[in-house]
Length: 177
Figure 1 (spheres, helix red, strand yellow):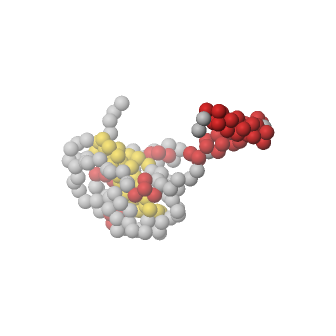
Figure 2 (cartoon, one colour; figure 1 turned 60 degrees about the vertical axis):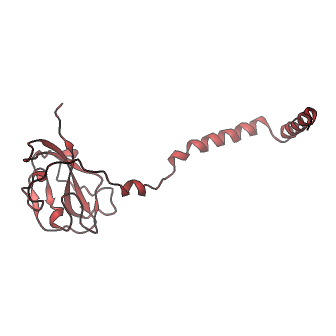
Figure 3 (tube, rainbow, N blue to C red; figure 1 turned 45 degrees about the horizontal axis):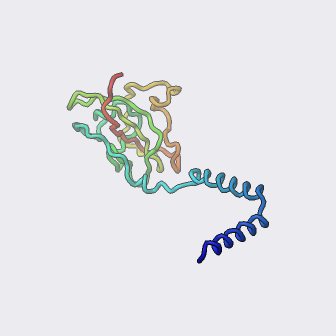
């Protein structure tokens, strides 16, 4: 193909495009494309894979009975212990789901003498367990300091607000600032 043929082909194509479109129409389509592309991150995304891999709990030396209110992790708990209701100290009983909103406490582990930050998550989805009620309240704060108040039903953001029991997850070693 000769250079003149390519030049002629491009010239005729660009003249045809100029006859059938306007600058305003072109700018409108470009604007629509840019606006639509900027909205893509706002579309809902399935987070099933993120939920399947639960965060791992830091290793803390264990001692005591998770079905006893005297267990070291339960220093700020107020509710029924999940370990007595078909779950464990860190997992909810079958048929319930763990709340995403929690209250926190700092408990001393008698094995190593260190303080650990504990997340207390309510297990939601069935009626309350009714076994192994524990109300220690160490470090509990008034309800207006919600992150450290344990007298709230924390089953917000779950499919149902029915409270069943509570788990105690170790978040890490507490450090002083």
